[in-house]
Length: 445
Image 1 (tube, one colour):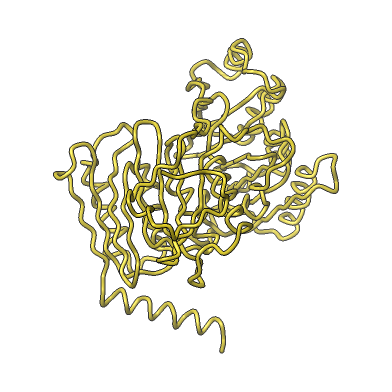
Image 2 (image 1 turned 90 degrees about the horizontal axis):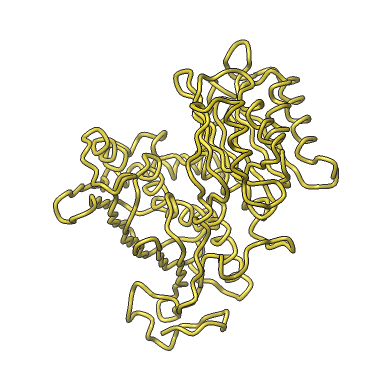
């Protein structure tokens, strides 16, 4: 059978099911004292949980609690959400967006439902993966400037000696996407050389296209494909600094139960659900809770083929991948925020100044709106020492005191030590002797 025809049939069947069982969204600002409660009921399908969480996190809502149930053909979720300041969501514009994005009107809106790729002629997308090193972002930005490419948006992550970036660039003169095949090939070749650096045998990958994808999900996929979850000899995190991730099997129900304890932070739920989805696991039940600065997550999962985790090797891989997903967005270093009029070469100039002052960028978010550049950088001293205040003062004098602002030191956002026994959110559910912990190194009360 033609695969394209088969996919079209599946899509039409899915639309039919959604017509017969349209999603229902209830937003409640009365029942909970300190959060807005969002209830979502819908026909179930693989990936729907990620789509819902993505929509909520993309508008910067903080998910403080969640209960998820999708065992069977129906999907039922309850989310307690607040804004970034911990307040209920009262803005009617935001509430209406949530209803439209998650309710019946979303059924036939691929731009809302899709977490894949779509075409864009406004810019050219560049994806980069390779070994991290001090000054790498500066080198990449300098090459793009030399090639007359203007970076309008970008997000850069580093983790476990690896780096990944998704950048959106335009032609310097036309301010549109770059379409010339020869020029695109040259951009790809030169950037790949930069990623390899002096080690020509190192793994590096550059992809240039006119596609648009969900940037954060794509970064997770890129780093997962680059196997950043594999620990190296140079890994500076010890066991006490890592998230506490455990995987046990509940044979009575053929579930694997994943529990995660770590310090809470924005978009944590998205990162873990994204990873489980991309590893082809289905979340049947979940309970998410935050207590003060800490987050506890519990997932009841099976593989797409219906089986729980089958071996110690698979358990270890799930554990490592979830640890990596949580750590990638942990912002180590000093947070600097740049806000100024956008111009060609701005990113190259700023990152060059960082490099000249022995600062390395561990994470970056570059955005351009209405001619304004709003860039956030997390920087560390290239030698591993704390960032010197005099160095920051010197950089601010060059760039402008009002243009570059220090937003504090987020080193406290490292994963917290979890020395106590795992706290299961579904209490007595785990008293059955039919649970098997593959690791056999922790006891559970």
